[in-house]
Structures are given as structure tokens and as C-alpha cells.
Length: 507
Ligand SMILES: Nc1ncnc2c1ncn2[C@@H]1O[C@H](COP(=O)(O)OP(=O)(O)O)[C@@H](O)[C@H]1O
Ligand SMILES: O=P(O)(O)OC[C@H](O)CO
Image (cartoon, rainbow, N blue to C red; front, side):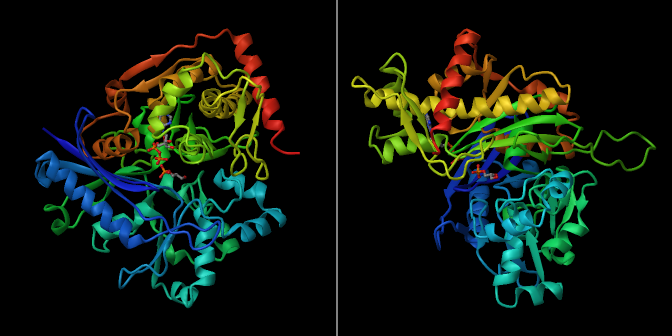
């Protein structure tokens, strides 16, 4: 039997999963990661803890699987994206904590870039809207604020990387400084058309080129793990940012195929195929995982096939269930929300907009705050719980509608199904309501660890376990299919009520 090992380094935990070649999970291990909040709006991780926990879970997963490292054909890495690490090339020590993707400290620098009118050019080159979310302005902040960092960087003594690069550096004892296109695409420093770092953007943000990792396709032979770490040198065969990895793990390979991950927030990605398109509806364009085409004898080396996706995120999704639990104390565990919500036939006209931290795509209302509307004397906690669950589906439906408008503008066909994953997709009531609102089937796969699975597939492709994405698509199985059961006029009416409630979140 051939195995693949996926390292999934997420915001809240480090996890490792051993998959067999059929894409079935054989063993997994997970360790929580400390969240560091030095000031309001700042979020950091300790890079040494990231590495330590990731290595420990990889060893534990191999141990649990009862297999030798030599039985693992390749390692795939997937990671929280944008989180920025800067370290010393000689000592391997980070010069500062990692600045996490949620951290807003570089917003003033971004506001300046916007005011200087760089928005349109940056969007055309990188697919991104200028924001502190991306790693470019975080790296600029580190160079400007860590004493001596800029001088050291200019002498070529430092290395920058997102978490994938940091893990590869450590997995190879400092022999490998690399990343993949899907991670590079989240830096606001990368030309996603040419697949290379953009000199003009590097100059604009004053980033020395010597800091940057080499960029490879997402499925490639990146290097080999140092033999002492896992008991055997294993090929690192695949790397992708976690959302693009989930898109891959969901076997969304063609234009229009779409997945939504229901975690703390939601991340929805729609594959665009090889065609780059900027959004007119407040969405991001990002590089999807890219693989080299099947080599043709005598044709020489081939460039990876371009692959792009539209992306939108909902800031508060599963987090609204946590608020019901911790804020309202309506439930003791997240999983109990479904029974509470089912205890009433519908939300009884209650609408809850969880704009706790403003609203993201497609609304972009940073000043919005949460509202509950439609309360009557008969409203109960159960109606509020149901409205909270429904808010996850409404926000996701608004995202998909925005993607649909972009797709239609490009002459593409409407999305015909939605593939789902993430912790909250276990909620049948939520998934059914999602299908009802969207008017298309919602498909929950047999393996919901799609993020890790995507990395395993990427590693398997470059190491000969799979010959093509077609073969991988054959492995995808739905565990449950939620068919829409609401007539479309009623669904439209519900969406119109929702949009009215969204308008009430700001004066
Ligand atoms: N049965 C459920 N119904 C609704 N939400 C749930 C359910 N189970 C878990 N959640 C929510 O899902 C989120 C956890 O999902 P997960 O994919 O682990 O998130 P993340 O990767 O963002 O940490 C939490 O916000 C939790 O409240
Ligand atoms: O680690 P997650 O699952 O919260 O994902 C984080 C995203 O990659 C941020 O862009």
C-alpha cells in the first residue's frame, strides 16, 4: 500500500493526516496553536511553536498509522495563508513572531497605497484588492519596525516566507527556500499572469528581492525532508494555501466548479479555469493550485497550466454559533444548535445579521454592526438560533450571487452545484437551507478533510501515485446531496428580506 502524508498548518491548530492512495484518512494527529494578541487588532503566532507542533503531529500520525516513513511516497503541505514569517538564514531563528492573516497593523500603509491610486494596477497584476490581509504590507511592517531588520535584509541575511516556506525550510534543515504559486498569489507582490515576483510592486513596498522564496507549481518535487526528522527522507511533492488546497481536494478542477468551507468564517472559491478575470463585485482573484501538464516525450520541460479562482469570504459564519454558545449561553456545544433550531418550524420572521466585525464580500461594510430584526412577543431563543444558522447560508448565497454575476459577465455558465466542507457543514439543517436559498444541490463529500486531502493529492500527482486530475476526480464521493426544496419565488423573497436587513446594519 502507498501512503501520502498531509501537513495541514491552520490558524488554530497544526494537523497531520496519513491518507492511503484511495484518499481515505488512515490516521491523524492535531495540536492547538497559541494565539497571541499583543494589542487590539494585532494577532501573532510563534513560528517555533508552528514548527514544533507540526513536526510532532507528523510523527504522531505516522506512529498511529503504524507505518514506517519509507512507506510514505510523498508529503503535501497546506497552510493558513498570508501569515508572514521573517527569519535569519544563518541561524534559522525568526526575527519576530509571525504576523497572522487576521492582523490589521499594516492598514495605514495600505490606506496610503489606496490614496496614491495604486488600487487598479495592483488588482490587474495580482488579482487582489489592497488590504492589510495580504503578506506584502506585513513584511513591509516587519522591515520597518524590527530593529536592524531592513539592513540585515539588504545584506541578504534574512528570508521571508509564508507558513509553507517556513515549514519547508525547517523540514530540510535550511536547504530549501521555496513556496508555491497559490501562496505567492496572496502576497500582493506576485504577478499572477507571469507567475513571478513583480519588481515594480517590490519597489513600491520597498521589499528587497533577496528575501523572497523561489516559486514553484503547487505539484512539484520541492525537495526532500531531512532523514532524521521523520525517520526517512520523504519527497515534498505538493504545496498549496489551505483554501486552494480544499478546492483541489474537492476535485473542483474546471471553470465554474465551486466549494464553500464552513469554518469560523466561510471561504468560497469558484474555479475560473485558465482564464484570469478580475471581479466587478468585490471578490478577489487568486491563483488556484497549479500543476505541470503531463509531459510529452521529447517536448522538453513544460510550464504549469495556469489556473485561477474567484474568492470571497464571510467573516462570521461558525463564529455566530460560538456566540450563541459563549455570548448568549443558548447552547453548551456547537453541535447542539441544530436541535434547538429544529425545535421551531422556521425563524418566525427573525433575521440576524452577524456583522460583528463589519461585513466582508460582497458588501464591504467595515462599520456595520450586528442586528436582529423581526422580533415579536412570540420570538424565542430557538428562533434566534435558527436565524443565526440561516445567516450563514444567506451570507454564502450573497457571495455565490456575486460570483454568478462575474461569471455571467464573462459569458460563463451558472454554477450548478456547491461542494461543501468545514466544521459547520455537519449541520444538515444549515445545508438544506443553503440548497433551498441557492436553488442548486449542495454536496457534502465522504471525506470532509478536503484541505489536507488536496495537499495529499498534489503530492501524489507529482510523485506518480496519480496520473491525472481525472483519476483524482474519480475518487471524489458525495456522502450526502441536499436538493433544493423551496420554490424560487420564495427563495428570492427570502433573499430580498435578508438584503433589507443588511441595509439596516449601518445608519
Ligand atoms: N453542528 C454544527 N452546526 C453549526 N456550526 C458548527 C457545528 N459544529 C461546529 N460548528 C462551527 O464550526 C466552526 C468550526 O469549524 P472548523 O472547520 O473546525 O473551523 P476553523 O477551521 O475555522 O477552526 C466553529 O465556529 C463551530 O461553532
Ligand atoms: O487556517 P484557516 O482555515 O483559518 O484559513 C485561513 C486562511 O487561509 C486565511 O486566508
